[in-house]
Length: 299
Image 1: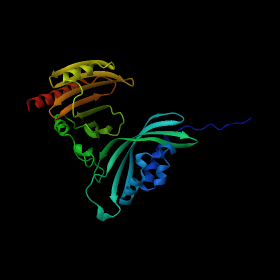
Image 2: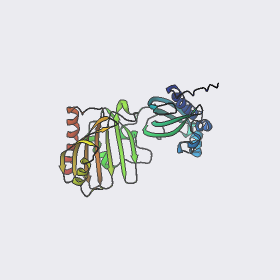
Image 3: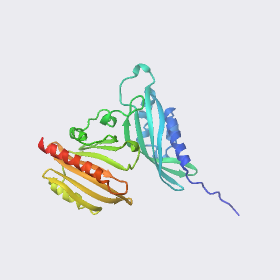
Image 4: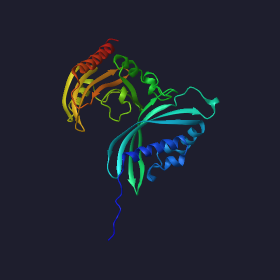
């Protein structure tokens, strides 16, 4: 009779050791060690680009600190998790030191598999980048998320001060060919893949619908919505309130749509705690959105 040894499943401790080893290889400038953390079929991803790594390793020494680790799902052969790390760069040659945006806190969405007793990364996707100073503190305001060489859309920059965001931090920023996006997360949740609530502004160079009224009508007619109500409507703007179920969790959202001479904007506050937004919070966001619209229309 033959007895086969049952393969052990993935453990959280093994996943944490995987990312600790990954970060140590990065600090050690060990390109081969980095590559071995990834599945053989995935070693062509941009993170492992030889020339980019060599350029970074030749110019900088990197200090890494893992700040957060969150397991999202796991079974015997695969796992999904996020982790957040801080990198502080110093020049190998002190004479080369200058002011630049190199230090950052990045959060990654990671998928890993276990094959033949080895655990490998199969997906490694950054979803939040926050720039920090040499002490590791967030840069001020939107500067914390604007990459070197990019500029925030003037409308987005103009709209942000209308909102009370003391307990939020800019955590993500994306630039596309015809749009921009900035996202604010609660200060203690800047690293979360799915924070409990978010404030976001989308800019588009044009509106796809024939009018804001048509856009709003299309938006509230989505079959996925449990409830939808138009709270404010003008020729060039609207504020709508919606509720929907996402992954069995109730999401309550206020959305402003605003057409200006410079483009089209969607400004959202999403409350995803599985219950309706508290009345005072709902009133705050609605008031700020309507104030923004009124100021824009009067200018």
